[in-house]
Image (tube, rainbow, N blue to C red):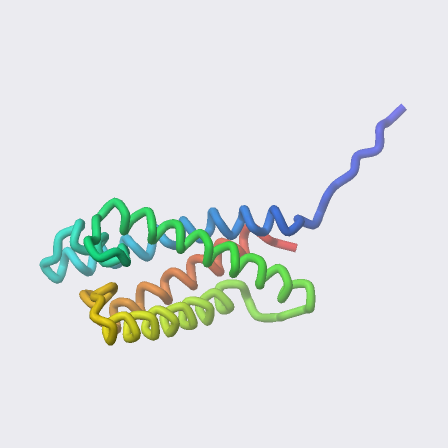
Length: 154
């Protein structure tokens, strides 16, 4: 007698969240790598670059790195959840393109937060040139979208 096998073809919200977390951290590592490389080419040390991610008054490289990866993971979860909804309603945009748009939106958010922080006397992200920060966010969004598209194939 054969036992029937059940194949679960659709992932749930929890699976989407885990996919987003992992893809977000991976994309965040790529983004940080780009910023570290650009910083090195610009004469900045690795710890200076990582301190840019720490919003505290006395920034530390380790805190900056952990903060960046945590935020990358949270934004990854948000994107994966949004992508799951878009895929269900029949969006025909490829995941990588949606991720690119998402990265652009995140850059606009970062630029707004940076400007507000600068007006209040903070220097969070002030060391990065705007074009460099934009490129880093586009790399984040592109890689996040590509990874989510691969992980959440329907």
